[in-house]
Image (tube, rainbow, N blue to C red; front, top):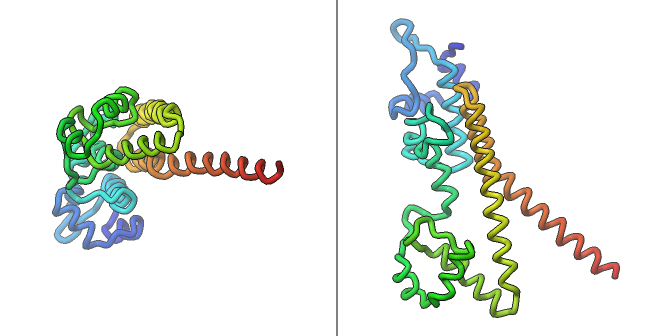
Length: 225
């Protein structure tokens, strides 16, 4: 289907000036020129504008992040790392300005016992993004484990917590593979919305609601004992 730019504005609620800016920046393909000063846009423009809008508003991706993703938009969702790079950056929970430490630097700087760190690494409770890159995020979990020990909470609880998270990640990978298998040029945006919304909205909803229900049940049982 072909659209005038006014129709794109109406369908996406993105200003004309912004759409033209995306074209200049290479985030959208050039419009088809019918005659002097008359241009038409395609379903691809519509789909990509929706995608860019979603990435900016829901994920907080920058133009540079989106450019990298769109450069490889026709590749498989399962095999193209550059296509899912904005997702990876968000999932890592590590900012671009984060300070990294080698294992030895991490142990020395924060005065952590090597035996404790090795145990947490082996049990999958500390999960550095790369083998020898540690950050303050890793430190925060180590402090949590130390607090557990200080008050006498069993270590096995947080170990099982990490094991369940690992199993959930397998389901999430299966979801990505199935989304990849139904990928077409027409559903580009909706597939990414499904993936992002599951990981950053539904995941929080489902996990926290189950926790809420469990705690509420305990409170009610305690009241009526």
